[in-house]
Length: 501
Image 1 (cartoon, helix red, strand yellow):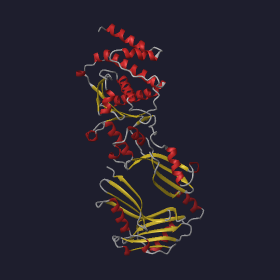
Image 2 (cartoon, rainbow, N blue to C red):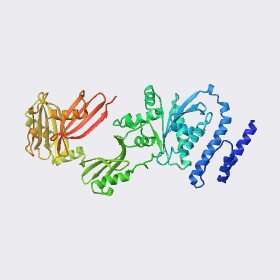
Image 3 (cartoon, rainbow, N blue to C red):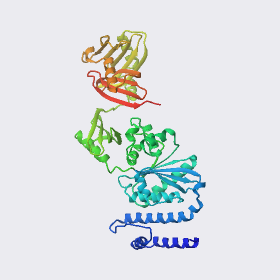
Image 4 (cartoon, rainbow, N blue to C red):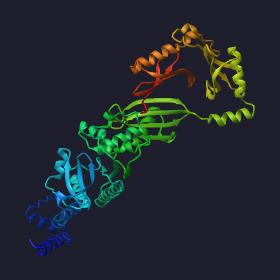
């Protein structure tokens, strides 16, 4: 076919596209050999707009395939970058130096379905991307619930990678806007490593998804790779942009859909109903999506009637998974202490220190620490120090100087609870009121299921008027923190985090 004949053919096709009678255009196109278009007349105008966009993209592909590919010899093409698109279908676009498509590699059957009937070799990257998006929409891979796409760019030229990232992500965002799709685009540039490629092969996912998961893990080490690997791109988008997870290195436009979940407002209603109040009565509200034990959760926090509340609520069915209640911290301790000691309401830190040292009957000591707190219903000083033979802990009333609580723990002998003494001047309890440090240690280690550990620490503290042991230790993989009721031995709180590399 001569160039003039090709131009004439393309002009005829473009005349179809600019016709004001959309139905007649579709009928004419249906008669064209090799073109099949299914259109339900009852569908909305929005669907018709999408159809027009897809036809336009198809015509541009025809044009680019004739005029562009003649300049693109696959045997002599230099690869500029690789663009990976992840929705549920995952596919890889090889891009030449003049930003035309060399080939498209599909990762799964869904991606093959998206690419069915399309040959994008030689097509300009933006045009080809729009054609792929049109097919994803047509096949239901992008909709109101699954509205997120991840764009990943790999290549040796980082400046060009960033340019392509911005161009592709911006083009997709514009495509969504033009076609009235409430979509969200995440984009990143990455440098692939053998470790990343091994994970991609192991889990049969793209390098782009591996990198996104790694960035979420860096922001929140409580997750594991196995936790997140099967989540959808939309769910990963929700976690990547949650305030609970300090994720960096991802650019996002639009918001990930929560239409499959109960929503933040309903989660707050469920939490407040549980304590027999309403959302209008609570303050300092924080609601974020989280993921734990295979569930997407709403983490709901707020203050009410002098207490801080924390709920974990199943994002799908609204079931309360866990709840926690603690006294609201009304004081900035440093400011409060400074004001009170200046006015003479409280004794000074030096006075509290002298009271503890005198009671212990020691003169030589080290590792001295004193903190102002508000517990036992009033202001207190928490005093700790060590000698060569024992560790001492005191809680002293900051108003009166009375010793509320004291403990002496003999060094290197905490396995024998008879060598540990404690007293509570408010209740006249004896050492039998509290479990020993050795018992608290055993409880924590048994719960963690570890025997090889290091950086072990244990301290007796008070929390909401309750004596607790704060136990911390590390293994090669994790750091553990426990809060154990010093009277009952019950585990109140446990945190497990990945150890720093």
